[in-house]
Image (cartoon, rainbow, N blue to C red):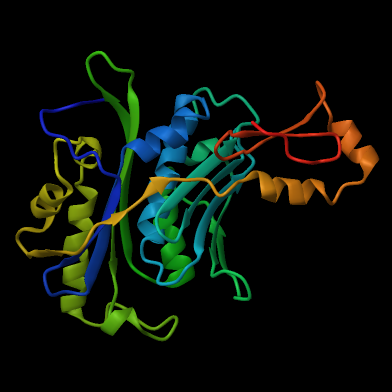
Length: 307
């Protein structure tokens, strides 16, 4: 549990960077209000909240690299007590996440919560555009291990990731969830363009640059990713000052769900009258969004009721 310091870095953002003049590029994410809003509304057991917070940090790190108006969707599916973890990032920085808890999670943590299963990464480029989907086994004990394995198997890109989730404690206030992460990748060539499957680390210098950067990322402490009194720029300087680090513009992120009454009303419109009648309880049909927990009420014909 982190403790609030005298200075605070409260904004939610992703900060891109490049290590020196090398092909090592990365991003660091800090989630304060967005992490707390997403996790606190679900009231999951702490172990599930921690894993879900890591998933949110991961999609923020990955989604911030999108160059189009689309969405990145992360899913971890398995046979464990929390068999489904979902988080997504929409262009512009909107984050949301949810989980399914189907069993006793006591004593389970990390990928053991999901159990034996797989990761699905979906890039939705919008209407009339083809979806890209990558599926890999859920390998490793931690989500960061599984994500690194995904990049190596699906994209053949050397990747290092550290993720952290915890609560911020401040006098006179309730504890608040925070999440953070850092990711580096070896991205060769102008814009990282290359033939799929082509060798990335082509010589000894490439290998040395990557090995150093990946090793430094693994030394990142949880507090460095979560403590608002430690600036993200300070963390990057600590890690990469020997090689130099270039920092680019921050990209803001926020908790935001895409649900609305019109969408749900359109779905209810596909049901006949008898099906709708079966959904009525206490004089209305109530639909609760799995992501944001917002409850929407509709009449027996599926028409939206005013709040």
